[in-house]
Image (cartoon, rainbow, N blue to C red; front, side, top):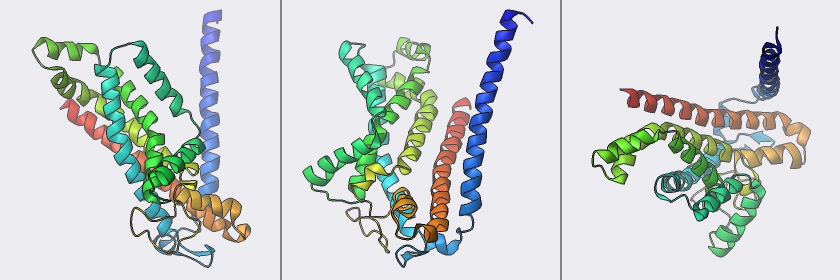
Amino acid sequence: MNKKEFGQFMGFNLLRMCFFIVLLTLAVISFDIISKGIKAINWEFISTMPRNGMTEGGVLPAIIGTIMVTVITAILAVPLGMGCAIYINEYANNSKITRLIRMSIRNLSGVPSIVYGLFGVVLFVQFMHLGTCILSSGLTLGLMTLPWTITASEEALKSVPNSYRYGSLALGASKWQSIRTNVLPYAIPGMLTGTILGLARAAGETAPILFTGAAFYLPFLPKSLFSQFMALPYHLYIMSTQHHSISKVRPLAYGTALVLIALVFLINFFAIILRYHLRKRRME
């Protein structure tokens, strides 16, 4: 075995070792949560209100609150993020200002979620007088997801060859016709996949909703978008660290964690199915 083959052998096995370490870590965490959380999962746990200071009952208000906030996040982040990505990649000139805006968007993707929570308090709760409610939390998560959506959508647009654009323009199509018919059909699967993964991340955030609307204990469903709400991430945080009887509610905390993971998995599974159907339709 020469030096080149030895380097290739070592590099390949190093990558394989990294893969198995990540896979093993994920398997251990998943086994721990599933084995301890499955005992608390039943129809009553999913479909009833919490009782007796969250030591009994279910997590229905937290499930409904999480879904409502995620929907508001999608309504804000998806059209704005995709529209911004289309403009930056297809229309904007490659100037210093455009590069500065692009760099700022990348930096915003790495801002800690607690900062977005504080910004949401100032903008939506205090300045816009929306109060601590579902709408404030959803808009805050939407702002947090927006840089991720823009970045993922722009990368999907960049993956489309320029020949697709130039071919339609040469045939007399307008700029928007070229984008709509030759670019977006090939970029949409990647754009939606990145966007939905961003929404799945937002669904599991605690810090942005901690200050903008999430409540410690509400044994009823939210009545409107301007109501406080319970959410699975914040509910799990309280049950795991702040409850007055942590040892007693630990099985319920594991059950809540399993429900949250299942919800995020369903969002990711929806992204995979949607991407498959869009790619299949594009090939037909």
